[in-house]
Amino acid sequence: MKGRKLRILYVGPAHTGTCRSRKDALVKLGHAVQVLNPDNFMRDSGLLYRVETKLQFGPGTILFNKRLLDIAVKNTFDWIWIDKNVFAFPGTIRKLADRGLFLVHHMTDDLLNPDQPLRHYRKAIPLIHVHLTSNIYNVQELINLGAPHAVQTHLGFDPELCRPGGQAPVQREEFRSDVVFIGHWRKHIDDFVLPAIKAGIDVKIWGDGWKKSPNKLFYVKNALFRSVSDKDYASILASAKIALCFLSHANRNTSTGRSFEIPAVGTFMLAERTEEHLSFYKEGEEAEFFSKPNEFMTKLNLYLKNHEERQQIALAGHRRAMTSGYTYFDRVSSDMKSVLPIFEKYCAQY
Image (cartoon, rainbow, N blue to C red; front, side, top):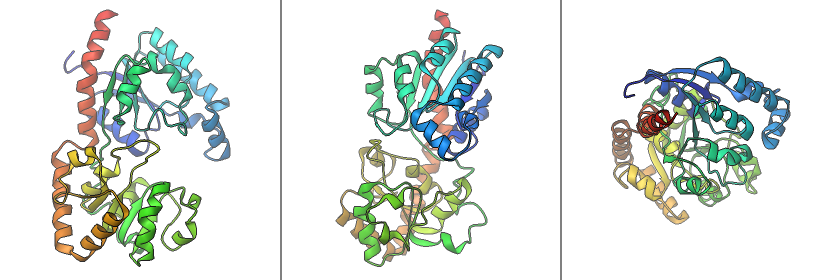
């Protein structure tokens, strides 16, 4: 079994984001990967798509489930790899398992977050052979919910996208800032970012949801209220002196993609302090961390004034990211080492 090249049906939006990076890693490992993107079955990317995602049901969902079963019947796959199941019905998952297909599910969100559209996934947990989750709390929770196997994975970075200095060309005035944050608005972030803005620090914010903030009027000059492309993402990070790494408390995150992408582009990272973050980087040497708003402001002011020390930490953080197995190829390679022995036992039984 060692060295065997698998035929994998990859179910997810593998044309973009971290999903694409994981799919590309599987291909680089030599596996034959075919992609089925559920989003292609939705009517559009506007209101109807949002409604169908919220309900996890509709004409696109029905068509997707039919297509998933058709492809599984007409081809000989070893695995079905599902990236965050939103649209596959539990009945569809059961039929795939009954056909002897080995099912792997990967997710970076919290399965117990009520705001996540995961009702189909939650019902299908016992039917999926291996669950890969980046949420440390979900590992035992999955087992408690009947998962046969649950393995912790981690987010990472794609070196093709997150290069030192960002993607060329990066010299765009709107990208430049002293401090940048790219991500969704979360309530607790206001407690940190607003004092910095009011103190006159050059903070620039990119991402969705910031209009939901009760303090949105304070963000008018700082927030661009829009998401960014994969290419611009790295360039925006690289164009700042300090990049902030906030976590989703609703998802109970202890790290996130930014935890690895910021050091990968060579920018100084100031992140929320967690045990997991401290296991990835040495505090004060490879990255800096904070817990309370006053500590955040103290470190923000300190490192904006100390260019040389900031650069030294950014460089050390970059070296750590590049040499510690934080790329998505490294992550997926590690995942495969965990999953393949389970697959071998599965094959021996059937």
